[in-house]
Length: 424
Image (cartoon, rainbow, N blue to C red):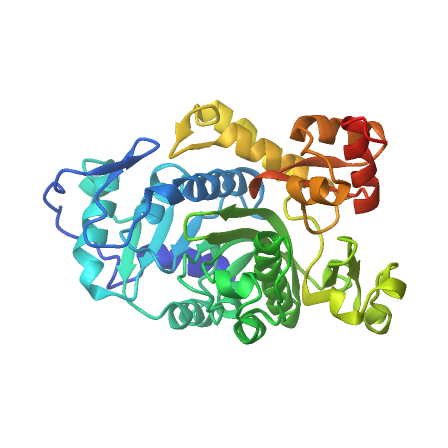
């Protein structure tokens, strides 16, 4: 009851949301995403990141429709580092949010954010009545989230589009998130993900990361693992909804759903081992730390083995949730249109295939298989179909063009590649 009362008071609380005099019409827009017009002004904005915002809007809409304990409660979103306000605007205009809190530490962006959010309510009944469905603030993200928690103001979606790898806000974000709510995390710290900033990954995400042949997936697992650790400390657990890597930046974006109670804490949280000598990867739990090895170590030295972790070792996505997101994208006419080089139907389709629980962490580059097999690279589709015929799980990865995810041992992949080329 207290949380529900706080949610209602949030929509009415003075002085930020007092009825205000109608604003003049905003200036002409310069950009548009899925029909939502805005002006980025002087804020940092990348049109290449629109696909990540599309995914967020789809997930938030589904969470509003069917993922809440009290569907009648106001649907509240908080954009903790909103930039020009385009994400906050899209949560209002497309995800059906009843209220959005748009925050950015830079007060210089206030005119830009106000102008963009005012586009949503210009001429609407709410604006005519003097009611607002959004508020703009300029606070440190961690402080803002902590204050919302102390005021018992909980949100259904919290989006933190941060720069770099600082994850200090994650615990405060979970505290301000409703059970069943969605937290959208971001990292642009490619050095930590690729093993060149191990101290940074350890301090931010609790994982010691070293260079791996599938570094971009390790980056996603590093972010999820850090979130899982923080949730566990608070007595919760998380489920990844989707994990999205984009080369521009590069950017690691992860949407997780907060669940009540702790799980066993270790089944999807552990270590990944890769052997440079044979190319095989394995996962190990905390109870196996003294047993990390590779079957080929009798003919290689210990330096051939690279271990990273602890991090998330479970599925990167929720297949059922992604299937509903694809259905909604089709319903809205988003699925088959190309926006900034990304087709949602293709992207979500690959993510759904990646969700197979039989698939272990990591991926294999086709040129790595062909190098070890000493043959020309087999066609990607042919290799995947051949592996499936052998009873293995195999699919493409959204992370790159010439890589596959499979539970087939690398030695068997080599034999299949040779069979395709009629070498054996």
